[in-house]
Length: 127
Image 1: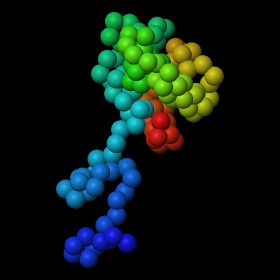
Image 2 (image 1 turned 180 degrees about the horizontal axis):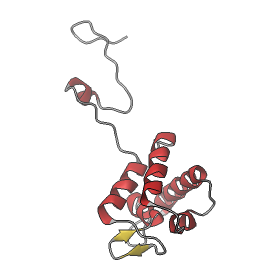
Image 3 (image 1 turned 180 degrees about the vertical axis):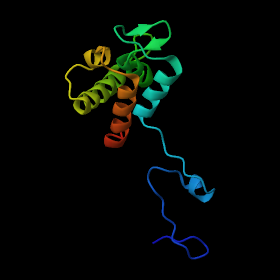
């Protein structure tokens, strides 16, 4: 096993950078679900529309974060596939077949979205 110069084992964990460990700080890498939450926190959440002014629905936030929005130039294939995977995983966790309808349900709260995104970040960190 690799060791540092003073004989201690040097372990390189996957979710953190080695420099962060040596500096005494653990900084986890954000998942796509964390980025979606950040977009919703920053711009606000909307129901009944994809977007309204700056506010985003859950599906609009996904599109913006993964780059599959129609406003983004460039190739869409990989971004569309990633957006579909993220939506599929969220649908699975939410127990729905339609994420837009789940978002638009009037009984839905912003806290429901946050809980769903937090669960997805744990269940699918590699998305």
